Amino acid sequence: MITALLIIYHIWIPAAPVENHKAQNEPNIAVLEILDKKCNSCHAEKKKSSPIFTLENMESEKLRINYQVFVKKRMPKGKKHDLTSEERALLLKWIKG
Image 1 (cartoon, rainbow, N blue to C red):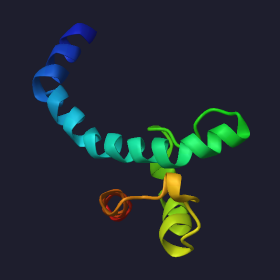
Image 2 (image 1 turned 180 degrees about the vertical axis):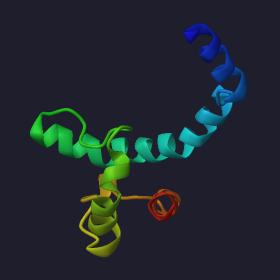
Image 3 (image 1 turned 135 degrees about the vertical axis):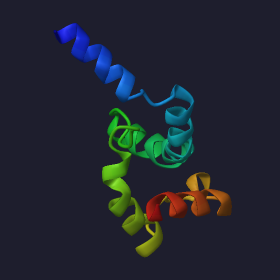
Image 4 (image 1 turned 120 degrees about the vertical axis):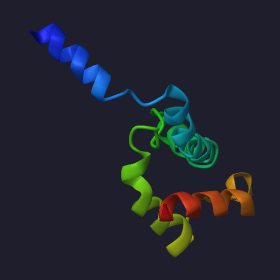
């Protein structure tokens, strides 16, 4: 009986194609690359810890990132970590998305 239900479940509820899942995560991967290069590199280095922003937690950090980067303009610090106009645009698009 359980096997029959599983077969029916798979027939009626198709799995999402892997390509679509990957395509949906591509913007997050691009944002994570920015966060890793411009934020994690400095924060993790100073605290000698693991990265602050990860693919798993970055969505929950959107408001904090927006506040520090765009509202208060406190981050990132220094010329070495300054955001390019393209990086700023991508971060804003992600935050608003």
